[in-house]
Image (cartoon, rainbow, N blue to C red):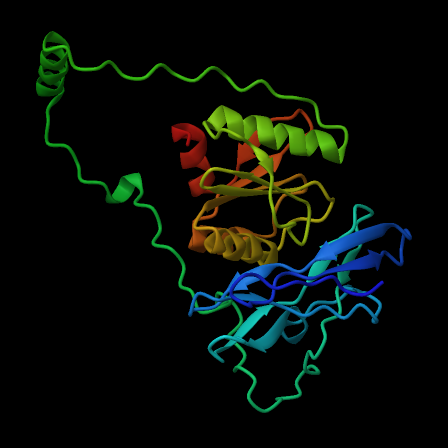
Length: 289
């Protein structure tokens, strides 16, 4: 079966889908290439090679994980993550791409390789949220604060919002339980209309709500920096915030990258309670949507 592709109203290429069989467990998948934003605003999608077999990603290197690609609309050169698929059996498959330059080929016209640790694409990371340490300190004394609170109540100021009820966990036994728990937790945070995301992430399941894109990774492999970067890039195309849920946790580099990009990270324990593992997740858990 060949790759399925189409073009939108502006003539830009839309994501392609190819059938993929895991060589380890022989399970069949359908992989859809993610779309990333060029600095000019045009969507950039890699062309998948339906004739080539997927490769098991056993050893990782910078050259293998990034592909130089020029925007068909403005000609700008960027580096984008190499398409990968995480099989539920734990195998990570690297999806072949048509016209991808050989590793270290230095093909003419290719975009220069970014430095290791640099954020892919042309976009810059968002400004981190201000923390309590950078907030201006109040000069009120306890007595004046009490007086102000009394005065506010006297003049009919609105009372503080009622505290949210405690989250009711749900025991996780299967990958479906992990996705259900993440959806219930997002609803508890205040996000409504939780649904499956339009674009399937490279690993796990994508969830979406108004202004939010979430990724739930129920595999036994800790999430890597590339997983966090791909979620952040996809959320940028939809002008949305993003949040990551992982059953196996995160590597140290993934946590560091998530802190740089202000991506909240949660770990799903088997009792069904999402636990924040970085400051953005802690703020989101405390304040809600």
